[in-house]
Length: 575
Image 1 (spheres, rainbow, N blue to C red):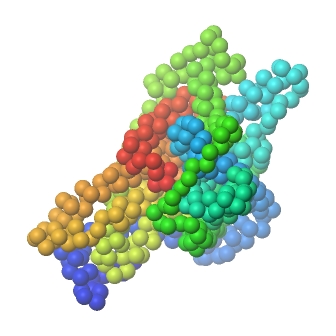
Image 2 (spheres, helix red, strand yellow; image 1 turned 90 degrees about the vertical axis):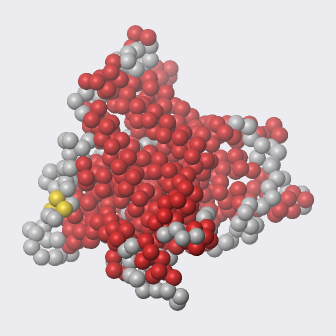
Image 3 (cartoon, rainbow, N blue to C red; image 1 turned 180 degrees about the vertical axis):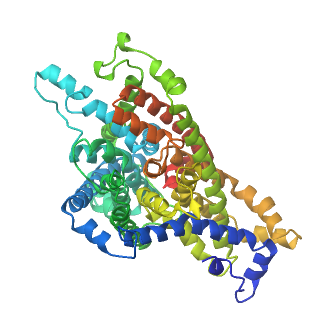
């Protein structure tokens, strides 16, 4: 791979080879080696592990037979498909009206609603699941207790430990993906066809049904696919909600394979279809968006007319605020209330109020302070590595510095189609043996976080570089600057905003990561997300909520900084 990626064969005019020689081949070899270690090597070992005989001698397909003929494993697949499909449909129901109201109507408080979407996006799904456990567990949940006290009923209204509860919680934190695609399509769509329909006498709702939705349908389908993929690969919410209900999905079944006695080979075989499904659906998504079925798209955004809803403008606002309440405000207040309670089941009162949970988490708990430091250390280091590798890869690809450089770009984007849980199993297979014996060290966490979020750094750098015309660099070269000096003094200053935005987004993503960390952490490398799972298993919800509030506060602060750097496209860049 490295040979192809950094080959010095010139193009028709030899410019590529001259540019490459001007900078030196070592950086490109280093990038190729880094991508091999972070992406290719773990995936190769994942495949080899799936083919390894349980006794360790020879190759076999026995693991695949076990994985896909055992009834309970097939039930888990069926449950995952059911949950992911339901989540994707529910996300469209949530997101499409919100996107239309924000982009095309005169609905008030648009800034508040957009902020709530960003808030739902940066809130870890497992933290939302914890909050809804406090709210809607069958007997102790606050909503159910209030209902039973008011109505005298013997059971609550909701049971969060069910397939419906899992779908509900995951949807609240994946709908921003469907929102992103739909809102982007609506922003690019001209109002001309809608105006023509209005001239012919169509009302607002008929125009929406007959004109607007058909035009943005490909984007809606793309959002559906993204929500489906996020749901099928999610571990946090199912781990907290499905396991207590004795419901298995693909991700929890993979987690169970690593409980004693472990079945690592079967887990590897069971996980391999996930990246294939992800890759196939993302290919469908890309083709849908590339079909240019949006007949009114101009590439720069057409003329748009704000739809005046009159007295009805508060109806979509009510829907948006209802969604924000379910995904952000109510869970946030619940966590804060539990974090400041002596006993969360007793509800809120001054007699039950305390700040001891925060004091215990920050100063007395044996692992939380170290976990907070680890979270920042691992995420920040991974962000630096991902930004350096992502930027250099994007530079090679965009400036065509080497024949076959596109292979580096493909490798940098490969983790995009590999769910975090699959990537973690690949790292376990690859880095628990010589020559890279990294398990139990901080390096395996840093490497895994770097690989997991490398596509964010790469796409940010790629977008930034595409906005800088190569003639600026050529002018510097004509003036006598070398390739490295041109890169350092011309290119980097022009793209620093995008690169820094990518660094912050990787840092935010790393702080909230669970699916990779839960497979790779050790006693000395715990992070905030894994400590929260430990506290959940211990039933210590008050201190768990306190740690959750700390995580949310840190993430929100970073998101505000990132929003100021990258502007209103924070969600788009993260995706």
